[in-house]
Image 1 (tube, each protein chain N blue to C red):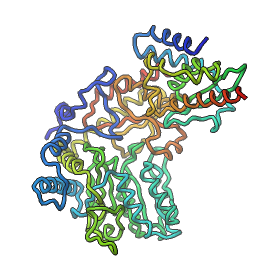
Image 2: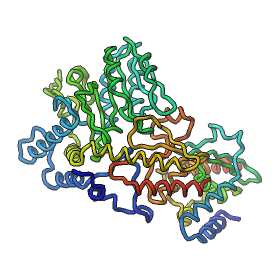
Image 3: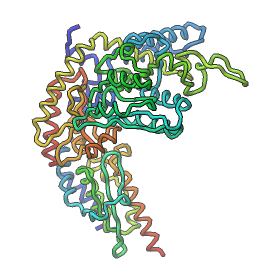
Image 4: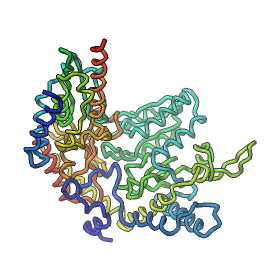
Length: 405
Length: 141
């Protein structure tokens, strides 16, 4: 399908609304993306036509719902190039996925073992591991960052040793947009026998990772950043780890047999899917992927790269504007500040003009600490954004500068 | 001047403006006239942490009236603080306690006092009242 921006915009009903009297310019896609009609319809259709609890139900509705949910799992598996359907685990989102893994490693690590994180992680890929360190006596090491918002790869190589058991980095930084060299990071960790978790929350709306080729031990992401609903995500876990890690939560669905003396656990993926899942969410996650594949990821990448270049160039024409995250490999995210002006003030003024950006530390306080700033304004673009919207952003930022300066 | 009279005066001043931009410009100007807290007092003890902007607030008692000084690192937040301080500073503790902040809605700046706004202002109002309670207790003794 040719990339027809007007047709694509028409797929997203929210894009036609007004905010504060102005047409909405939605540039907070890194926080959550908007949903196409196909995704919204899949949720409405599920609840209107075949809502039932899945697995083990003998009645027809339950069977239909189970089929649709498992079909979505298959869609997700294929999209991410995952070898087996049972390595495709539904979670409530990226944070949940990370916690399943961090919790699972508690008894696999011993005092003095080391785990490595990067300096540009979201808090959700820092805190669960700090909690793991508290439980297991493991030491947390940090890969430092360069001024342009890229990781210091040589420092990473030096941190790796026989003591390293786990490495966890994001595929793409949420605050800076930097695409990290995860292939090399994974390969180097594996040389030392360490497992790797990749936080793909910010990547999967822009890139299509092939998880078999990538060879990460764990890959986590959230549906809501890739045009699906909130409350559902993917935890890819290599079969080997699925058998080693203990369950995260106990409950229904995750058992093989329960007696008061001893319970045995279900096989993958159900071992990690205790309780009634987000059925509509899972089905809609599949619908989001189907939708994305009608556009084609190469076209998305090309369009977004062009939009990023245009937005970067346009914003840099504003006096006193500084962009954080200027590495060579980026997704369409621009974090910036205006000299002498608090990002909160800029966000407030541009919102009054109908433009949604995010301001603050973006749940990545160590990055803000690195740059010695209270936060940034972050404009994050999707394939449904346009150059005209970039122009409106630039105009609004200039207006804010005039009012606040 | 009573708190109510000051609030009415503020409502009157803001009613001159036709659109949000003029209101904001005026608010930002008011922020510049804020009785700024002494730099030495901008410590962690007097900070009110919002998620995004920081607010510092200090209070002293002079002639049985509470005098507030404050500051913020964000200029819009500072503007709102200036409005609140104009209404509540140099007032008796009991009057501060019985007053409300409904006038902020009337002048069209309601969104800034939303509990989810993360700018520290809701906590600041709470802190204003806590100072008033403390001084009221002190005066009764």
